Image (cartoon, rainbow, N blue to C red):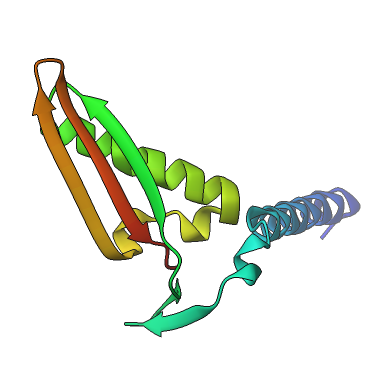
Length: 116
């Protein structure tokens, strides 16, 4: 290998190390640390809050749109408070959603316990 090849290889390796380090920093920065204030339980391979749920609400022209808006509301708040690991509605336990229809469209309210 000549000097130029060694320099190029070194630059590539250093770039990959920097990107990997940045990704690890981002992952570490993703958690707010507030989840430590809640007791946790293990449920089906997941870690969930014990006795602490969050709510979300949404509205839309169809039931599906209102449900999706309620889920986004729940996820946005949960992610803001605890980080993205906790904001996956599909991982939650103790889910309940109540929807109703009016002349203006649909509205939904949900409760769910965050898990990661």
